[in-house]
Image (spheres, rainbow, N blue to C red):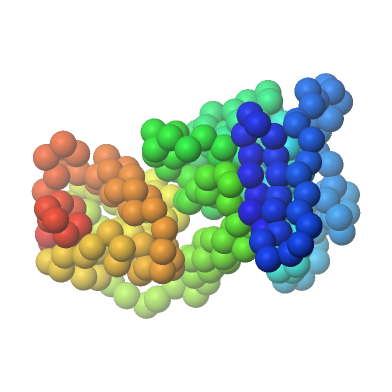
Length: 281
């Protein structure tokens, strides 16, 4: 099954089956539609879900009901509890009041678009974010990553690929929440990373990193002087065996902006032309 979105309508095709269906073009939504609406099996509030031991709660911010339904169905099959919010402003209020385990965020939303919502979230939260977008341009994908999204999928996408990305992001997030390794701080020049406390300082001043930025820096600090291809970093840090390597490029750029004295002339995270990146300790 492939989920597609964009100005021409939303559709789904079951490959290998005789029939397939295509839904009607998107109607202009009524004002009262853009509110938090419970997905199947989701009761009342995020607080109710959090009270259930071992539950992983995912918020899907998507204004197209067809895409939201398909995404919800596949995530629920994986055992996740899912809440759907169809408006950016409603999502901001809900996510600010209560943080889920992960957010699946559409780029084009009423009220507040996905890029603006991601920017507002990143000002106060490190909650993992996977962006869904009908825009195919690289500039739009990169903009989302630069604002702090952990990953993205462009429509049309496979729901199975989305669930695989969700599992990978949650696995990485849970590693950061679990028992911390008993290690001395990792140091490279003015940068010190404490894996136990999940903190980073530059010249003694604390620096705020997203989960993925922290894991990328930790991996490079554990392997100083070694050049890695973008595909290798995608596998080791993101846990993906395939994907768009521009994700790595953008995260390296964001990391340099936070730890380098002059990001345009990096002294720590070096570009190895024709290969990838290397950390010089």
